[in-house]
Structure formats: structure tokens, C-alpha cells
Image (cartoon, rainbow, N blue to C red; front, side, top):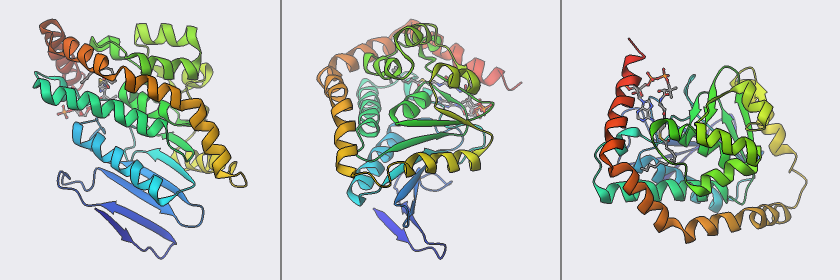
Length: 281
Ligand SMILES: CCCCCCCC/C=C\CC(=O)SCCNC(=O)CCNC(=O)[C@H](O)C(C)(C)COP(=O)(O)OP(=O)(O)OC[C@H]1O[C@@H](n2cnc3c(N)ncnc32)[C@H](O)[C@@H]1OP(=O)(O)O
């Protein structure tokens, strides 16, 4: 359910009340500037915005609502000062039930498809690290602005996961075939500056304020353009890729189940989780 709260500073804040909401508030917050029609979508799953099944379902619902609200643009960001999105919640992969794992993967596919195929323009304001699924979210957007001193990339192979074909394609479209091939196979994480150099992001910003300013500038470039022509062209460019993913989605899910249920993968994942904990010591 969507709740509208009028704000004196002409900002309408939409907040969703959710059954699965953690104590930190709704998993996804949306702030709509009623003057520009730009919505800022704030991913809000502390501490690192890792993508659980329920979180992805909320992202999908949010985008559906924004489509119905006929917004003029979306800025996707995080409230954290360090992490944009840490990717898939790795706990979803620890000895999962097959049913849940299939649902997780289906939601990840749908999150990608929903964000990739929006009719409105989208900007990722990457104000923190964006590994794996975090990079995926950024890649779905049309334009990426990244704050300095963070890292981004598809590091799946480092975790023992294969990068699915539709995600490889999105990476290839963004940085070119050669760069994408090497980056996906190696699981390279790029610094903000390296990401700019290879075209994984479009602009850098010193801080979130500057990034927000640049994001609005990008969206402003469409101010005087027919929304129909803009979105029709985008969808003509992107729809085939979404249809390709949907056609092959069951094979994709079967491959993931085989990958994740494998005992070698589970042993590697346990070691990876331990390494995340050890880094703190
Ligand atoms: C089900 C189908 C699978 C098929 C996969 C195909 C491929 C498709 C796409 C996506 C796959 C993925 O996204 S896999 C996930 C990859 N993510 C990572 O490798 C990120 C790991 N995390 C980090 O590198 C760091 O945490 C960080 C750089 C993101 C942030 O560092 P920071 O120092 O700020 O924070 P901490 O490391 O202390 O983390 C805080 C807290 O969060 C836990 N954490 C971190 N990342 C995740 C995560 N992805 N999922 C769940 N939990 C995560 C971390 O362990 C800490 O927990 P504790 O405080 O309890 O120790």
C-alpha cells in the first residue's frame, strides 16, 4: 500500500508500509519532486542493501507504481555513506530450499527486467560500493554517476557464480565486448576512476550532493522532448534483450540451482562468508 505525505517543501514523499519492513523503516523509499516529476528511489535495506527475495519484490512493486504515476525520471540511490548495494543477499544462497532459490533468481531476473525496461529515464546515483547485483542495478539505468573512492563490478566468478548471459550482455552494451569479457571472467572490481575510464559509469562526483545535481542535469536533457518518442526509442533498443531473457529464464534458473546447490559451491561460499567476517578483525 502506498502512503502519500504532503511536505511543505513541495516534496511529496511516498512511503510504502510493508509487512516485512525491518525496524529501520520501509525497504524502499520514494521521494517525488512534484515540480520536476523526478522520483528519487532510496534503497533502504540496512546495513548494505543486499538483495533478498522480499527486497527485490519491493523494488519491482515500486517501479510498477512509478510507471502508473507517470513520473518524468528516476534516480536510484542508497542512504548509506559507503554502500550503494552489496548485491544479492549471500545468505539466500547458503543451503537454500530449492523453491526459495528459484524464487530468488526469478525475482533477480524480474528486478533487472523491470528497471531495464522503464518508460521513464533512469539514473543510478552510485554513492557507495556496488559489487555484483549492485553493479547489475546500476547497469539497468540509462546513466550512471558514481561518487569517488568506491568500487563497482561484476565479481560473481570470485564467489564461484557464473554471470548469466543477460547480465553479460548488459555489461557488453555498456563497456564493449572485449572489456566486458575480461571483466566478467576475472570478476574485476573497478575503482570509480577506472569505471569512468572504461565507460562503466558516465560521470564521477565528489559527493552525493554533486551527484544529485548531475543526475538532475541528465534528466533535464529530456525536459522538452516528447516522452512518447523518448520511451518508444528506449524500449525498441531494450525490449529484445528483455524478451531474450524471458525466453531463456527457466534454463537460467536451472543453471543457477545446479550451481548453488553444488557442495563445492557451498564450501566456497562458507569460506567467502568467513573472509567477509575476517576482514573486520
Ligand atoms: C540465487 C542465485 C545466484 C546466482 C548468481 C548469479 C549472478 C548474478 C548476480 C548477483 C550475484 C551477487 O550479487 S552475489 C553477492 C556479491 N556481493 C559481494 O560479494 C559483496 C560482499 N560484501 C562486501 O564486499 C562488503 O560488505 C561491502 C564492500 C559491500 C561493504 O563493506 P563494509 O565494510 O561497509 O561492510 P561489511 O563488510 O562490514 O558488511 C556489513 C554487514 O553486511 C554483511 N554483508 C555484506 N555483503 C553482504 C551480502 N551481499 N549479502 C549479505 N550480507 C552481506 C556483512 O557480512 C556484514 O555482516 P555482519 O555485520 O553480520 O558481519
